[in-house]
Image 1 (cartoon, helix red, strand yellow):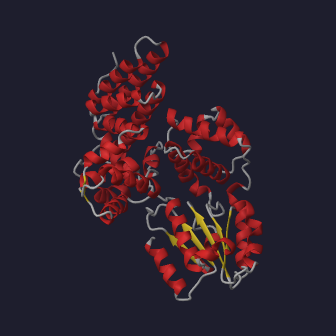
Image 2 (cartoon, one colour):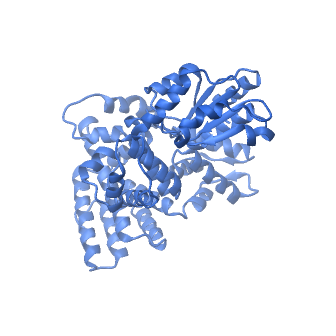
Image 3 (cartoon, rainbow, N blue to C red):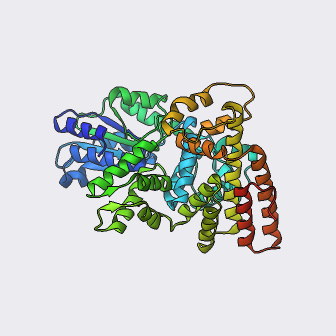
Length: 461
């Protein structure tokens, strides 16, 4: 239970109860917090008859449900998970990113739900989904909507996830959640019945929306405590993620060194759901041993496609030829298509080109490798946020990333010159032609490319 929720539970037990609660942030924490509030309001034995969980599609019935008196008395609770009534266009990029991340993690249901929310918030319709499922989106549309490059992986995510929504007959109703927001807003204009409580959870919410302001005024808004502070962002800060790992391992009666913590965070990202899931696997793997080592983390988390992709991009950014070759062979063993792997490599090179441009135009072409993340946040990020002329979009793209990703990408870009990166992109194009003609074995083409990129050669042989 997060500290803010613990405080709310304490207030409820002391007889101080609000009519509406909104939990914003990581889905895992928001749902867990909502359940903790429900448990404080209604005894477990009475919950089947006193607690209803509905979706936004039933928003019009929420008022009536709240007015229904429970059979055994007590508090009536209505829970609405994952409401989109608080989403605005400012949240669109974050929703698209989280949909793609969910797809990468194998959570197709969550990926489609988030994509549908994002499409609605962006003011798009079913025709957009149909074009996306066919792979017919114009490059200008992609650049307008998505905060990441159209790599092979990203394009597969969009085609597969949109195709699933189209096949299921999903409709993009209520763009931006406007009608749903009006229903909840009208409901809250009148006091919630004295014996009832409404609980809403949302992965993204714009605090400028009227509904958010109304809930803040008449109820309780809960920030799950992991956000970076960027509007619409729900991912943990790196230091919060590291502290969560150390705390979980400590509660299991074990020790963990800093290298192992770093390896866990790097491979799971900053999602609470992903972090907790992988930690559980690691602790089971360690068994009765009292210490979690980096080697344990690599044993558990390196045998997946996502880990191999991470290892490949990390090795290329570090100019680590041996690491890149190991990652390529791991992906080949998992039967990853060569063109898909090449798409990942191309995306890595394009990202480095963007970051190198930022270094040259805003940071005097230098990035001190000894710079800590905290110092980067304090001294470098403000320089990126400052307005300046002659930005071709590179600064905006880096500024729009998670700060920790921007920190690592700029540090990686400092290892290359812009000329090396441009030549590297030419080598990617050569490899693409070689794959399509079948002149050489696919593995040889990709490994030769990796060697060339790490060494800074002009062309692949």
